[in-house]
Amino acid sequence: MMPGQTTNEIEMIEFNLDKQERYSVALPFTINCTDIEQNLIDRKGSIEISNTLDWHTRIEIDDPLYGKTEADVSLNKPFAYRGYRFFQASAITVGSARNMNLELTPQTGGEPIKINLARNGSANLPDGTKIDYEAFFPDFTFNAEGKPDTRSAEYNNPAAVLNVTTPAGEAVRVYAFAANLSDKIPVGAPKAGYKWRLAEFEKSPLAHVLSIKYDPYNAAFVAWYVGGFGLIGALCFVFFLSHRRVWALIERKGTNDFEIVLSGDANRSAQAFEDKFERIKRALTGDETVIDDE
Image (cartoon, rainbow, N blue to C red; front, side, top):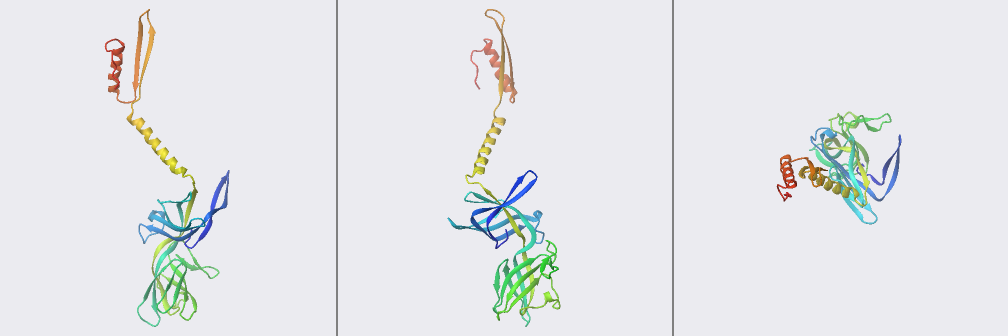
């Protein structure tokens, strides 16, 4: 999902032999993505998995029955709602920006003005100029049709595309580059009374992918606990309980004479079992009438 995207459907994938089929399933509520964030180990590094601590997808659920609910779905913290569990699945690692600081130098002279602009946000200058975010390109270029595009997913030539409305009501498209461009270049020339520059920005991927699982009875939660306690019980039985077995072969030798051959086995504590086995033998031969049940 991308910030600003709204949907009430999820895409299901079904595998039939060698075929993979995709189809949409309607949800009983609407999901609106309000923000995505990526916590990086090195803020100046890439947005690849190796440089990532966590991903956050902030959503707002608009439910006809229960109203609006806000949630933050992170890598190790799924969100549960009405039997649906939201998981952070992956990210589309095309470079983008979550927040950016713009530096505007007035054409008439004076100190530069610094403005913070959020993705899909807007800001106003003291003179009444309005700035609206349009797009961000990590490796800016113009395509064959003359439209803004990116050469790659990397931050090689980052630039923000802005829609600016002057106090007089004139609409102007502005390109703010991280690099210092010459005023003689059309995209670097001052516009709307200012020289525009992208001073710094917070790196973020283009979009996040959420995985949604429907589990109305929380069966996975129950199975996890039942299986966990069962595993603990099995380990206790194996490691803390001794398995002992004793066999007796009885053969008649006369009217009142019998020959008994005893054997035994234990999986642990052989010395203790040997003492126990000796007491059983003495009890059978009449040397001891009581068998210790330790």
